[in-house]
Length: 326
Ligand SMILES: [Zn+2]
Image (cartoon, rainbow, N blue to C red; front, side, top):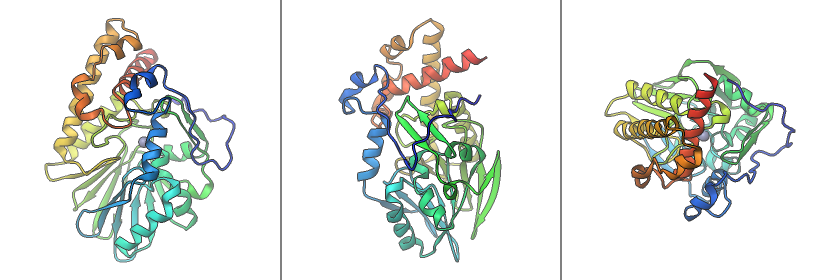
């Protein structure tokens, strides 16, 4: 199902335009965690603008940069650096400098895990410099027009030509970067309908984008085709492809293990089950939120920019949407 709003009037040259659409009823209840009336995206953007850029080495020629949006992974070979995700637009040159300082190789290829602004913000900068951008084919569609995701207050898109993917794939693609083999995979819509998971071998690293953030409740971008069932399915596929030694680069937050991903999967499945039961009992969204179906998970997962109420509403909306379309 494609419900992208492709005919919206364009906001020329606006990379990230945050619209203060308040999540119905959530702002007041979540006010202890968020500034009054702030959207998920506003809270996240403030954090991305201000956080110092941190580098974590994953061993020979592999690095993770965090702070300027989603996590950015860099893999160097003899002559070049391949980047996975490009942070937010305002910190692109800072990111490029930090990557060059670490790898001493220029960035020549960039993979986007999905279209969101905190993972593609550097596309204009890198694309303008001749870097080849690679992504799942739906990312091109999303970046080519303005996208509006009012639930979380996200409005973005209509990137210039040079910031769009030059190479795309549908379900899987293989690449090499020096001694590392990269397998790009899309298991159907999960966080968005253009997610890419990147397995890196022999390093035994997997970059999963926003299908998993460590350790926060996830955003499920329902407007872009995302769903709770798709999230669980993708996580199951990743669990099947990894082992105890695999290092997992989440979309946000510190490096994780397969055990962390398993705990996240169990949380998703239980929350989905509880909300499904409340829906089956005829509860409205407000009643489901009031029933606090995430309560015992909130201490571990509820401290990010997605509050328990917002996550509950996302799952509720996802489940009622898929029921309605069946
Ligand atoms: Zn995202």
